[in-house]
Length: 66
Image 1: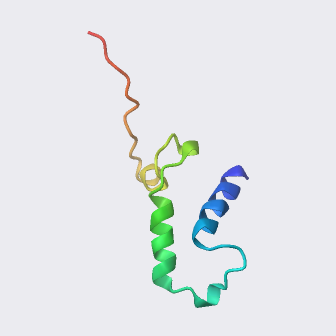
Image 2: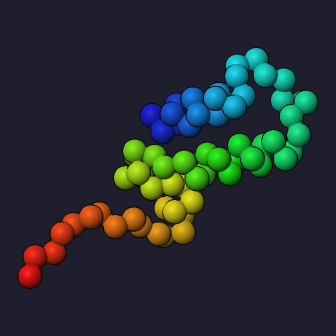
Image 3: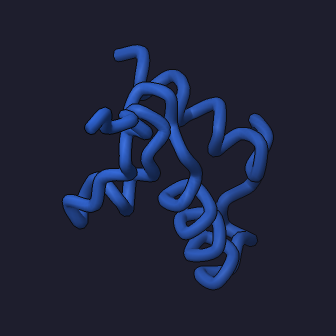
């Protein structure tokens, strides 16, 4: 449930409470969707939702000793 609350908070950055959704253009919704899906999330180990869905993982920065 926490991830849902966090996501709702992120959406509210773009669409404050009491926003009339009837006047929002599809292009604006798509822009918000793109922004949120490309925002790194702590809960996803600082990957973006798009990276997780594509199976792309960022390197962990572990040094190799020889």
